[in-house]
Image 1 (cartoon, rainbow, N blue to C red):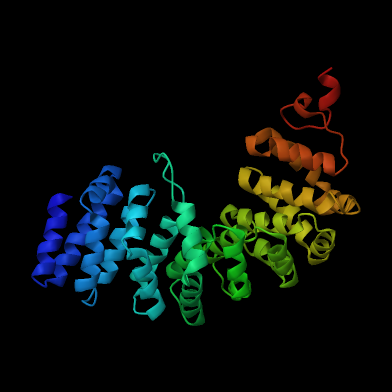
Image 2: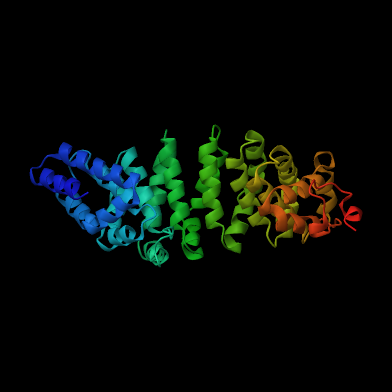
Length: 371
């Protein structure tokens, strides 16, 4: 890494932008390949040098993109570099690049990744993390959220690149570190933009997955949950489930958001029934019995729908030829993540349930054979 960074400095001193970009690409490749290279980059004061290079060579073709991609690699699950790029001012400089709209697709993706990396406490080898505090600072005291949403709107207004759109959606997800920041996103119209994009003709599985994961992150308080219901989320979900009936990458986050908006809201549960959400949830667990994540989220939808609206018990149990009960029993046996929530869903449906005395095949004559 020392030789690579020295080569970058030498290229910058000579005003050789292509050579500088080549050196930065090499640095990025090394850091993607090995965590130790991220550490060497940190020891070489990589963040400070990137700030200096952005100031001296950032206007040259390709340099800003190469710097941002190197920063993305440096900060990926590496705490020291997250802090260094923030403390040295590179993160705010990257926000400014987005603000001005002076970027290509690769630069935009790299900046979105960098911002998300910086706000995520995901370095399992670090003894502690400033990521949450940095995320709060950026989200509360800068216009980062507005800038990210502006970039997302520019991409979705035309024939935006799918990969860029998904990177920006993930950026919103990862930088929304508390309910206040999520609330600001909603106030700026972000929920409307997300639902509009998800309901558009031709919305791909990749975009829908990123959208629902982002909504799952920002749906952290009752106000946003109520807004999503009023803005038509529950009417959207059945259509999404019908379009991708066996795709767990779409179904799991879509059902997760659905379960969240039904929490402590009997009016939303009734609306979900009218919109066909409950039927869609039952079809999902029948279609994807081997997908633990989908099964778990269906269990949550069932629980939150019926716990305060017991009249929906019979509706759910009759859906899809009455297949829900057996599917729930099998899910809690087959998937460790469904054991507790699956049992709770059975209880909330008013069904007989005897915990670990059930037979391992989930059949209904479990109890007496265990005596």
